[in-house]
Length: 260
Image 1: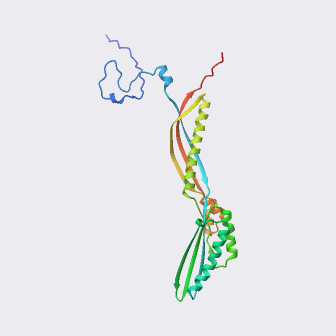
Image 2: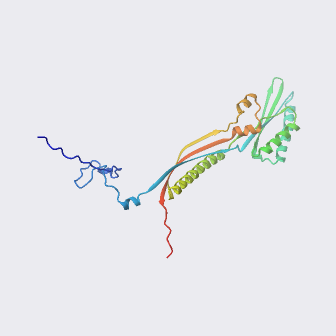
Image 3: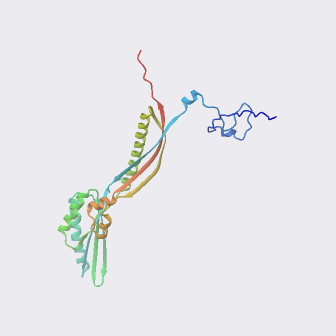
């Protein structure tokens, strides 16, 4: 006689994160649930639970250099020290006066002098470093000095760069634009699913990048040493990218009250 097999039974259990971790090693009574096993949330608890939307946002901005520096070198070699000094100082005075007439502030002009003896002669050099904030004015002044002074005066090519405040401002703007793009994305998602976007619960900048600008023929131009002013500006342009992650609260659509 064969034994009757007991009918198979099924147990339905919901696994949810266990909040009370302090009870993990405690013995539980028969009326309590084991750690890791909890009853399903009631409808009231479900309604009060926080609903969230997680989005990411990116942005990429660029900034041209805000400063340029040009060096003007004046030199002279004479048999006597007085003649060497006179030759250099005469042209140096002309350069500084021309810069003042063009409206350049004294704090943007730095003059250094070097005097030494070379064999049986005396050699004097003076270097005028000029910092410009207006690149059009820079070109006009350089062209004027080249035209008025002889070949013994050497004017360097402009060196473009960013001030620390300019770079920091670019980084900040990139982050803010990325946050705004993430918020707009979350708003559109809520509109699609018929919900209302709430306050941000978490804002995190996950990634930042910075690099200098490049142009197509930059490499060949560098090799030939013929970079134009515009190419130099593009080469010195800084790009900044930011990626943020934001968690927003999601609210249900508010029902409009009907006027009685």
